[in-house]
Image (tube, protein in one colour):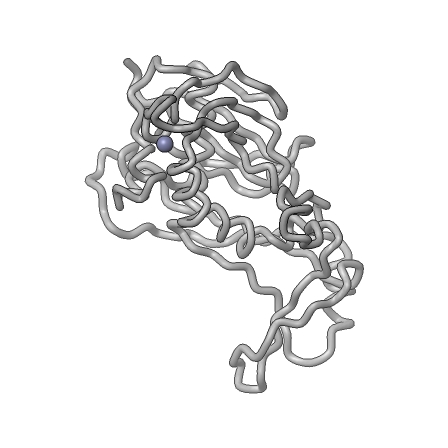
Length: 266
Ligand SMILES: [Zn+2]
């Protein structure tokens, strides 16, 4: 079985076309694509690979929400930088206070409270999902089974939690389609960077919001690996005639892997 493990940092040769809509200059202007977002320390670069129209769809439909709501605390605790630091004068996540949710006695959400990052209990929920249905020879369906969430926290978690008065908790946003479209985007970029045009790509309609068969192609992977030294791990392999990307965001914490079927071998 062939297995390609991507390095943590690399600048690939320019794509020269938009890897999502296939348009080329002068019709569109191409920009550099970070295969894993820079905001979560992605350093795999694919120059001249996305047009402004596709970049806007990706940002507005899922990537901005994913980075802001789902991984904001992990970004702060792993001291990740912010791309828009200067542009909107926001503090980078590494310098932002953490946030906790305040609840009423009946359990209703009341408000967000900002507490210093030093006092903020860190926890990250890695979601485990059913495998993509295409790999199980099943038809596409409009739902996905979420097996669970695996909680990763550091050794100061309980000590810090005890210090917080009142009814409160950590809240991490989880949107299956947002998460799976982000995984699809990372997987597609990785496949184009490593395999070029040697495969027939499946994921652009999902990334661009033109297909709702997200969970036919994106889902959970078998994962028994220990935490890694690198922040994320990314690899490509062949399963049943398909190229599949194994995307393990926050592998450094021990988080579970997800996978996306990037396309058919030509
Ligand atoms: Zn495009």
